Length: 556
Image 1 (cartoon, rainbow, N blue to C red):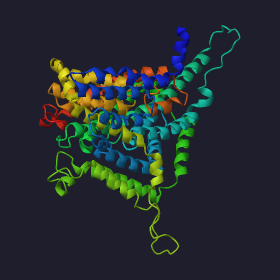
Image 2: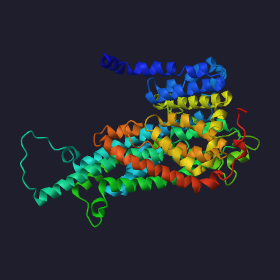
Image 3: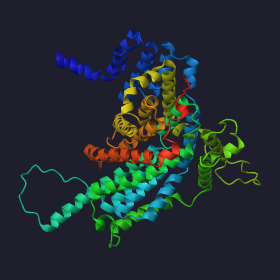
């Protein structure tokens, strides 16, 4: 009887996860007399956390729950909740991604990748470094998923040429006959070792792509969702922070950390899958083999298929360079930027979002082909670089709602008093060193992000980290920045992030391979972030003082 009930429950798992959490959590908003508003807001946050982890409904739809629940519980008016879903940070995200869509649409990212790989060469160690460097660079500007989806087929094509993947790396057939106990000859033993090295090299080369995508996305403010969550939460929770986190300041902190992590990841993958045989992996003192020449020819052939750089590609490249230059020079920090001189003398009129949307508009105006003004047969203004239907199809709109849901939760926490209550509960942590708190919370975030979306993880944890920092009188960025970066350290499981799933789907890896390698990657990531926040991060964000803007929040 019990077994039958258990079986039925498992069959109705999604239905149960949808209905049971709100019912089981009902005592929280209904029975709490001391802190009614705080309890109601806590109910919404816990319910959304469960739904985000279980994914019983789409993540973006879960993000819309505050629109329904906050007005019903009397926490926020409906119009105020809705205003949280399209803020400056969302527009920064949309503008940056429209530029990324243009880069993908005209295959500029593929041309850059192939050019770099041809320069690096096809020796295993250098090839891995080339793949990781290119993937990380592209992930700084376009989505991690798109970068991985573009790079992995290139890796696969090269592996097939270098190692005859289909034959050499196939698992040996299982025989039902009794095995003959014949001693292995030295030749067969050598062949077996070479075969195993090829299999491990294949795993390392395919795995390096998804790791580099996750690492590369951390380097820029628009590179991955958690970075934008941090910026949005800073503006929501601490509106007087003086635009402390902008494109230039974030790049100054996160880019060196990305380089350090990328080098350590490369060395770790080398050691794990290829060993320290310089002759084998670096090709020291060895000429290029026929298979390596074939792999090199694959890269050249792929580049030849793209043809010479087109007018549209050149225009997209110039617009991309313009975007980066405008972002860096808007407010570099060490000197006043162009926005300060021209627009921002009295207030923060021009932000990174303004720049992103301006450049995105250019993509719908600048022509994709050379205009022929004197030709009567051709239209006066040719088709633009981008059309709206392309953007509509490729832009991940769900992230916009995820970001908005996070801002709604942050606003609800402030108005209800939940943020203040959480800060009071965490005040005993005053006796624990701030660096230890940051390390522990970074590990907690890295573990949590293996089970749920990195944006959802950052959205849940950022307001809590901000309240904790205020309660122990530490600059909120000292705890929030490591937590933000750790939300991108989803290295252990295929389901942790889309790039991992793409790589795993090619069949070279087992879950155990990712888990063992990813566990050390998580440790390396947290250690790198700890080093960064305690060295160059301190003067960059003035982390040694508790800032005045952290004493006053918009909810007070």
